[in-house]
Length: 228
Image (cartoon, rainbow, N blue to C red):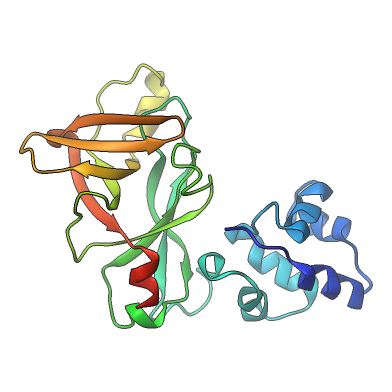
């Protein structure tokens, strides 16, 4: 959930700097900064370090002002006991998946007390609106590899390589094969040995996929998991 950032406006005023100046530092249009202040846009992970420089704050001070789900630790900092944010690239809304993994770790988020000592927890940014309003495009999805998913859970599904696609051309397919296709869905039923029944929200649609195209499936952590 996005939150207003009155602290950002106040810090700019204290330094006698402007939202337009911050926008130039970030390489974005000035309205994007005003949207962050008003709570209509989240600060992106790659904007945390340049924002800290512009505000003349340590990176940790900027992170401390962000909502829990947005507290991303840049990869250049010490990431001991942190949760890795897997690198993703955008995908077309017409595709059957929600993001593409690059195979790199781009950032880290603070490890919450409930997860202390666990190394099976990772997260990624969903890039399509297919699961809105549960998740907006760009939101983090935190998942675990320890416990299997049950019906009703949200899941992160890694798909096996697709040899053909009606959406991408030959060169794009060559690039695509270097990446891992990921779907984020609600798991409706998993008892069948051959099929997984899944639900997306926007537009709402229930589908079945063959298990043979599923490389891995991981359970998304709920608020109960986070707050226990």
